[in-house]
Length: 272
Image 1: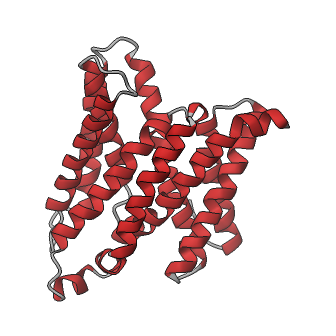
Image 2: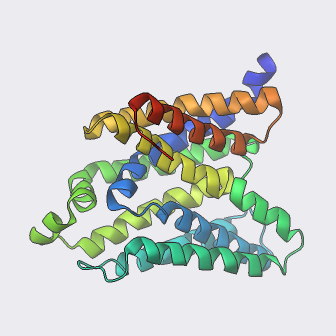
């Protein structure tokens, strides 16, 4: 048991940090009905890292991080510019297209790089077991700054997410605040996707928020419940990974899916 705590302490702390920020952002994503935005931004960040790798930079280098961030901010700009007051094409469709193109482009880039298949697998599932104390502290610092920014301007962000028509009527520059939302989202994703991978980051974003929405309408209660779900499911997923010798990221993702189904059954709501 001591080996379990020794091996899983830093990965679990990383999951707590991921839950803290992603559960909050997930509430916005679900209200905006842009579920694929996290997958798309994570895929764009992975594409930036893949391009850096093709130029000879290591995946954990500063050049790789800044190129990933630049790609992600460019994606944030595209997402904010393609949202209109009256959408002829659903915004979710545009985001899905960008995700698919980014994923295909990453395959093309890494097909010219040695061990490209391994890098693709890492981009999708990450390796949270190898997270270091420095990685956890860096994520905590970045997420704290982003969290403070969102707290200061929370009324604008929630108004645009929950009542965009009201935001337009109040003459709020929705496109600017959309860019700030997606750009801050991009900072979060760039830090998290290299550690946790695309699938786990998406699960932290969507599942805790979805579970919370099943049980309460109050914004604060949803946030606390989302954090609780993320914490408990992360612990269960890591225990399953350790005692049954499964990949950690995949174990946590599957645990999230099972937890949402169980909570839906408890609430009497069909998930599938």
